[in-house]
Image 1 (cartoon, rainbow over the protein chains, first blue to last red):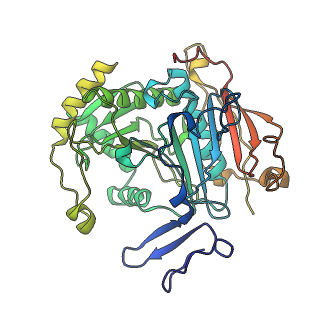
Image 2: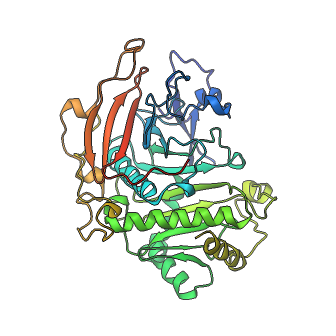
Length: 321
Length: 96
C-alpha cells in the first residue's frame, strides 16, 4: 500500500484504495492519504447531526436507535481502513449538547472500558501496530461535528510521537513517564490535580501554554493493565482537567486529547498509559499557531512558562470541582 | 488474515462494585497481540451485509459482556460495524 516513488497518480476510486500511505524520505515519516475525507460532513445543522440517535420521524443518522449510551462505529470517511488499519468513531452520549466534561462520572468510567475494549480488539489485529484513541474538541482544532465524540485510529505502523516516547525510554534508561512523573511530584509546581491513582501536570517542557499530561501513578502499559479502580480514577482525572479547562477562561476550551499506551505490534515491554492534552489557547482569545519555527524548524516557541500556567489551571480545576 | 483475541472481562466497573473498587489483578492480556489466539473464522471476519441489501435496517444484534458493559454488535446497511455499549448497572441518566 505504500508508494515511495513517482509523482502522485490521479485518484481513481475504482483502481486505487481509498486510503494509502507514502513514506516521506526527507522527513523519515509516513504520510496518510485518505482522499474521500475531502467530502466528509462539515459542521452540519444541529437537526442533521449524524451522531444523534435516529429518532422516530427524524432523519437517519449513524446510530439507528432512538437512545444509546455509548456507540462505536467504523468511520464513514476513514483515514485508515482494513486491510491496513482502522478508523472508528466513539460517540460518548446521545445528548448532542453534552461534552466529555459534563458526562456523569459513571458514564465517563464506562467510556474508559469502551476504550479498553477497542484497544484490545483492534490491537489484536495483525494489521494494526498502534491503537490511537483521541478527541478533537472545538473548531479551533478542526472539529467538523460538535456532538461529543472521540475517534480511534488503528495505525498500520508505529507513528512518530509514540516512537519518540519509546526513544525517551531508552535515553532515560527506563520508563520515561515513570521518571518524569517522579520529577514532577518532587517539584510539585506544575502538578494541577491528583487522586489515588492518577496525577495531572503541565510538563516541565510543555509546548502548549496549557498542555497537560494525565499519568497513571503505577506503571501500566495500557488500559488492559489497569484495575477497575484505576480506570475510574483516570476518568475522574480527565474530567477534572477538562472541567478546569472550561473554567479557566469561562468558555468551552478547545483541545486535542491523545491517549498514549503500549504499541500492539511488538515491543511488549514498552509504553506507559497516559493522556496528553494539547490546547491551542494561550489566552482567552488568542490561539497558538504553528508557524515558521514550529513547522519549518520543528522547535516550539512558547509565550508562557509552565509554572505560571499551572497556577491558573490548578485554580480553575479547584473552582470547577 | 485478521486474528482477534478472545475478549475477557476480568474485572468490572469500580463504580458498580459498591464504591469499593476492584482489588482483582489487572487483566490477563496486557498486550493484545501477544495474547491473540486462533479464532473461528466467523469471529475473525464478521460477515458484512452486501451493499444495497438489508435496506430495512442493521443486522440482528448479538449481545456480549465486557467488564461493566454489555455490547451489542450490529452491521449497518453499508456494511460498517456498529457497537452499542450499555452499562450493566447504569446510574441515573445525565440531566438534559
